[in-house]
Length: 159
Image 1 (cartoon, rainbow, N blue to C red):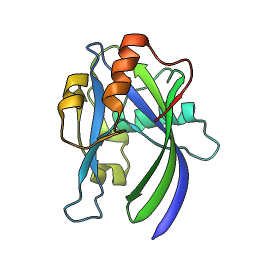
Image 2: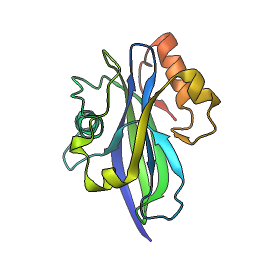
Image 3: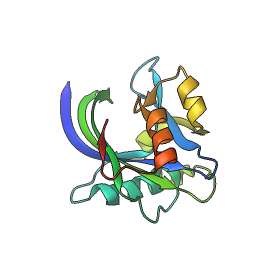
């Protein structure tokens, strides 16, 4: 199985009611593939900064032109298998407030996004804490709760 190391940017979009937008995905190449929820984002293009990728990915996956991703609030290494490839991915997370609850516009989705993204929903912190569904990153509810109470950290925290 092929292995790939890559950089990625992810954006936690928070609406006025403090709910967070999550996408529901699966690996379309697997029969009976497990499903998971995640914040928008993806790999950096060559020469692109994490901030630039965050803005681009939110537009591509959500259809929203994010004016500024703000400062990086968290980082992590994630290892996963997707489309027959094992990824070792360094992710930088941003948190951004939106002025209203957005409807996802899928018109800029790639073919693979059309096959792998199954839906989307706005989740509250209590809903995230109560769910038995898979949500990435795993500590998302606690992170969002902390950000809402105290604001973003002075520098990125390690997940």
